[in-house]
Length: 72
Ligand SMILES: [Zn+2]
Image 1 (tube, rainbow, N blue to C red):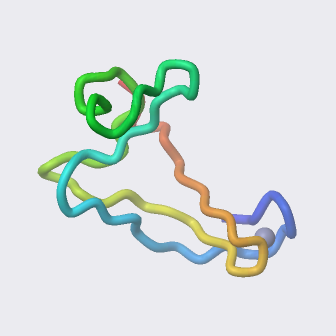
Image 2: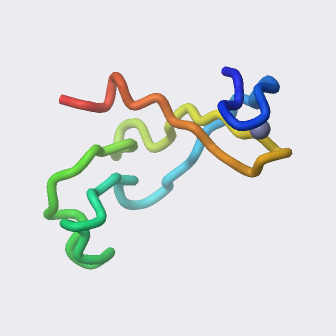
């Protein structure tokens, strides 16, 4: 994957969530970590698959996650 900021190649890795689900929730709807389990959002990890493929640019210090297969 090409970094959209510096256009160099990004490193492939995995973002790991050993306990609870890693979930993206819109800023306006986000109510904090205690209730995030019950809120709707884009679930990035699950108990059976607790890591998600992530691309990292060390120079720009940005990460990118492709969520195409995470949206239901
Ligand atoms: Zn970059």
